Length: 176
Image (cartoon, rainbow, N blue to C red):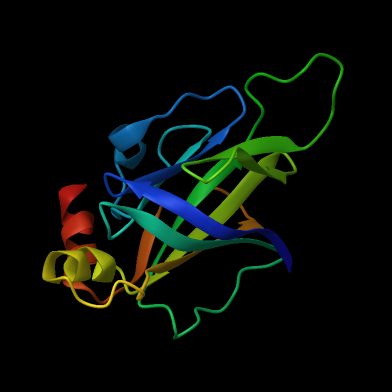
């Protein structure tokens, strides 16, 4: 297991993105034809993440594994989609890994992956909790947590592995 990122991402309008070098933000069209509403991967070179909070810092960890992981019961929400890492604007004469930019972090950040096809699992704990707490002015120290896990795989349709919160189910329905 390789930890590619362990820190915070800023949720802006319930969203965050990871974009391959040379790709502009794709937004909602990342969900076209998908069944899940949390991990948009329909737009080549972009991953669109849906968070449960409108505007706040959320905990985010990004992992690279050699094989598909078991679904960890501690995650309350889990979806998967395929993603092809590709450099859309490579520097001349380089064969470096694909640089994938994390949008909405505290400073410019990126992860690097070998070019190719991956399966990506996006998991969440406390999805929507920060939004509800902000509205109720309850304990602001409770935070949403997310994990994005990559492993080499062939391309396949996205899937919803686990949906426990009403908020996540609403996002899944919105994208249909």
